[in-house]
Amino acid sequence: MSIVTVRGCAIGAGRPKVILPIVEREEAAILQKAAEFSTLQADCVEWRADWFPAALDPDALTRCLHGLRAALREKLLLVTFRTKAEGGETALTPEQYAGFCAAVCAAGCADLLDIEFFPTGETLPELIAQAHAAGVKVVCSSHDFHKTPSRAEMVSRLTAMQAAGADLPKLAVMPTCPADVLELLAATEEMARLHPETPVITMSMGALGAVSRLCGEAFGSAMTFANPGQASAPGQVPLDVVNKVLESLKP
Image 1: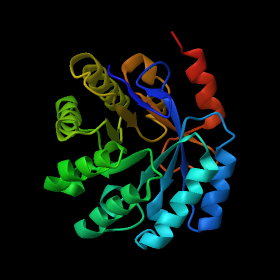
Image 2: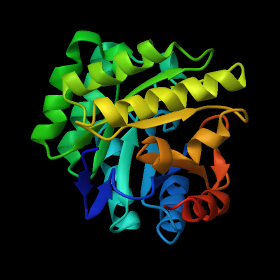
Image 3: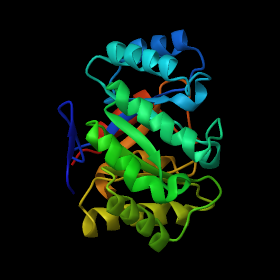
Image 4: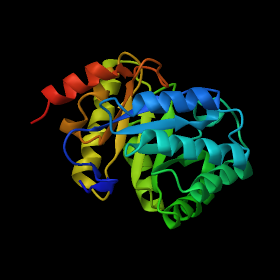
């Protein structure tokens, strides 16, 4: 598997890198969480900007991003606007989404930008190129909160993200039975073995899929989300448990 290095953090090498989500509505609360998270054993903080009512105001967005960058010091900052179509808080038009991505890139604070796979459609390569021009790595994401697609479909989505230029293809799916979790893990292993051009981030959601958030080093998922007290998706495991398990599963 290839490695994406940001701020000295080698994503795709060794144990999965741990991401903590910030899901707050007020700027003061967002920055307070960032300050708290800056001291925790984690590699990256995801700001879920869809929770922030002023996310489409470029001035308010830029001010909050600069505050986050200062508070997090050398921790990686992943900026995400999760749209309603992908399980987030707010629906955006394609123009609004593109404007948000452009404003994040212009602010010069984000290390990683989440760009959604399906909602962006044909504009995906352009949005990825824009991020790269600003020195921002791209997590390209796809979510299915109702089912687990076939292994072939999951691999197809992840390789399509690679083809569009994504640095870190990401897939989150919902299992309906234990076999679904195995399918997600098998798709992850197939990507690592046959399509190692980029690291990938994969997870099976909910309590049934929680094991997939802990065994990435064995199957090929390069990052995992942990719950620092408030989860941003079903099945996120508490941070202290994640760190203990990741350490115990090291080869």
